[in-house]
Length: 150
Image (tube, rainbow, N blue to C red; front, side, top):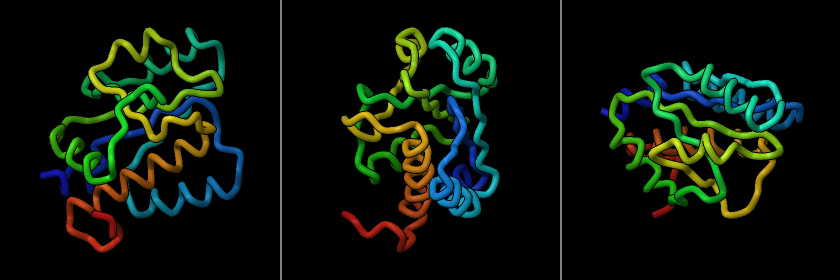
């Protein structure tokens, strides 16, 4: 079921700010080709309350909000793939904050927060890492050769 879910990209990324670094743009473009239909919605940098408003306004009623946060759940790539599989055909909206992160109210209003690292990451790099992990999850669940870890 998730193979179809990922192939149809039943998820999107809502990100604060724009990607300005060329090498990150190139990486995102490469993974977006591998994940046709992946949508990335950019929200303008502002104060945390305004960013939260913009994120919630961009969220569709059928989407499950999944903020990325260093306090979130740290998963291995295989565990991440299995977690995505549990959501089945539900549409997930992963949210990446800007330089100041995400508001506590936004993070606390969700069922699940994801951590890419216990370290603070630049939002542009977090976007690239998330897209790569979404692609990796797809290949894990399809039994592809991209993921070689255990």
